[in-house]
Image 1: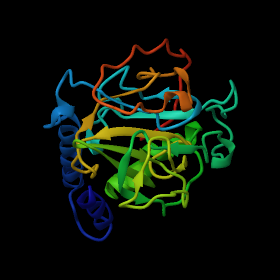
Image 2 (image 1 turned 135 degrees about the vertical axis):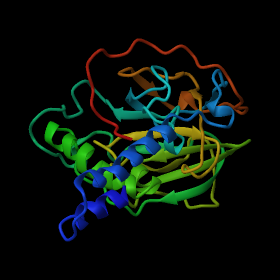
Image 3 (image 1 turned 180 degrees about the vertical axis):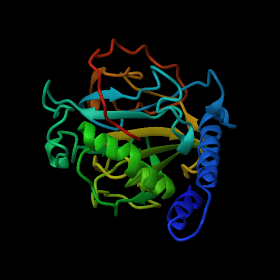
Length: 283
């Protein structure tokens, strides 16, 4: 993709055949499609892998989007260990979250109830990655802003690698070759650093709108390594909740904290989803 961009710029200064410019672009699309469609090599990539039971990463009333209860890979890609990832937007009450539409083109992060909500540890763990230096940008919750995200910003973020896609983030080592990733964390909100030991339910930071994100939301996933560039996704289920489906609103509270022993368990049945269309949670 970098070669494609260089050739586009270079064509203004040198006689580069027009068709030749698109060769690296086509190769980039092909390689990306192959990488995103690959099956994981670890247990998480195997069909029928048993989900790990952990506590939910949030408390309060939330709605699930891009859920692995509806399709796998849930985000349409296996890149960055996202095979079983899920997005969550806060729904403290119906209508509290600004609607998607034509106007305004963009909103401040503070306009969304998820922004600043606490993120909690899903199990006793060790922090292996923690980054909260990237800014929280305006929302992409209009048709014009969404077009900008997909046609321009998304491309640039892809070239920047995993860090630019997931934004501010924290990764926990749960033990047994399982790692939990929280993405799009609020800038400057992390209360932990690599090497810290945390307990289930402990506040790690706050929900933000950094990285490849349409609005403030929580992106959560389990994976096989602490580096999303090399990780395979792993399935999960939340104590007392299961795996909520797309559009399903659920309540997470202290009662859903992890019990003393958290081992593999089959996902509890998810409830019926909200039939309304929803456009959010780009990554």
